[in-house]
Image (tube, rainbow, N blue to C red; front, side, top):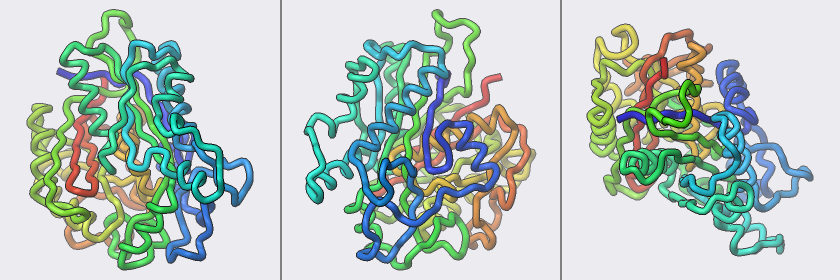
Length: 385
């Protein structure tokens, strides 16, 4: 069984729509800037990939993750040609921090805070009449976990249409924790480059409309891509360090569910968090899975990592990579990994897109998302042709 993606919406530091984001990625435009959300004097890292939409520079605002979520969902519904009425449509939201920043601003600065506003379902009900909303706090794999649940709901006959989304805003407590646990101080997120020093946080939201194939009520509808399968697992190997065996299992599981082999994959949208352990582990696993002669024209699949320009957008990062893959199908281009000059040893045999966007006819893509605690996900999507 496959599932159609008929609508897409997204906002990030490098664009306010999926197309703007894709164009920025292909042009090598980064959202990196000096941290605006809070006082940086207490932290070693001074950079982040923030959305610059605050009313007053230097003054943070509550509710930003929810605001972007509403924007992304509205874009996706309009793109799918659907009314902005989600009364009977499940909405599944992946996140890492939810509205943690709003709670911080209430605690620190006395910003207004209604407990109901901490739940995305409140705003989704007010904006779209949504009555079936669910939040998945599965770290950096959250939105792909939500996508897996969406496919299960449709396959089980519990829904014909599901909205899947992800959103996160930078929180000071999360930023501070990361600042203290990373050995080095990154000034940019540089996936798979020997100069990588760690992860920097990004902001944004993403949403897609997933529909049953075929949907009797919409013949001839535009389809951005088709979901072939989503593999998920939790290896619980370590609180932060990735487990090669757990990642290998989830990729193989996604391939098995999709009925494909490594030789069929044309593009891999890498997790690419920029941390030395994650990069070396992901690259090592993929080097084993995608040996010589696999993937795009026998040279191995093309690979890229959008976090090099968006930062790590946390819960929505996997779904954002999927949206970029869907646009790569249609536009025949794969964005580069920004700042990749000297790949790590484990990535030596991988076809990482470097310097400029690569023109390519892409038919099948794998999307990676790996989170703390061994929360792993891999999705397989294909071009709708």
